[in-house]
Amino acid sequence: MRIDVVTIFPELFDLPLRTSIIGRAVGSGIVTFGLHDPREHGIGRHRSVDDYPYGGGAGMVMRPEPLIASIAPLRAAGAHVVLLDPAGERLTDGLARSLATVPHLVLVCGRYEGVDERVRSVIDREVSIGDVVLTGGELPALVVIDAVVRILPGAITAESHEHDSFADGLLEGPQYTRPESFAGMDVPPVLLSGNHGEVDRWRRREALRRTLERRPDLIDGAALTDADRRTLEELATEIGSDA
Ligand code: 9D3
Image (cartoon, rainbow, N blue to C red):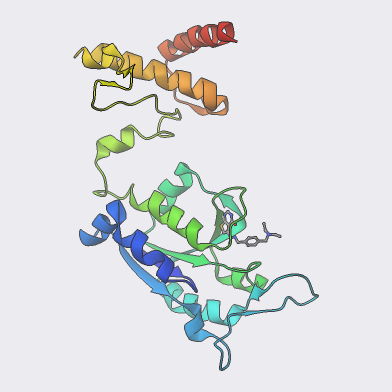
């Protein structure tokens, strides 16, 4: 996969794209990145990329020419062009999976109060990472990259995907590693029992418990068995009698 990023702050991407799973994916040729600074197409002696909004108002708007000059040669190569925008479609694991099937992604980052409306004429899709106000599209672009690259074949093991929260629509239950006892808190004995059937049933029950307690909105869309539904009924009684 190729991912090009259009940003006036390319340096924000240096370390994240060289680190951990993304860095390893670059090293093994699973993904290639290009960074493109619209300031190289900036206007005038100051290479300006923003200007005052017509009609007045607070803040600045990104001018169309530098952004479109950066995007145009990338589009010619047949890419899917995504604008990071607070008014875009919300990023979910489902959207990340769909973006991961595209051979060439272009991520366009806005700054200031947003981009001139005419930039949208060269955009295929707009994505937001949620209802929180940030200072620009760069960190959202990195979130999209992180979510997409980790699911590219070879980036992480297939087993890790099966365990993903949201893959089956449930949150993960509790996890433990060494030591067996820490600060008076013990690892649940079932995890030390060596009984894989019991471990699986315990994990499923705790995943259901955590989802019911923290994200009951996810239960509706989860892939549940009849056994899961019976467990949920038990948990609902437990949790109900707790209160
Ligand atoms: C006053 C209206 N604001 C819209 C909510 C203006 C505005 C605020 C922040 C315009 C742009 C920005 C910068 N944010 C992004 O470019 C952005 C973003 C975000 O702020 N939150 C979640 N997802 C995204 S994707 C791009």
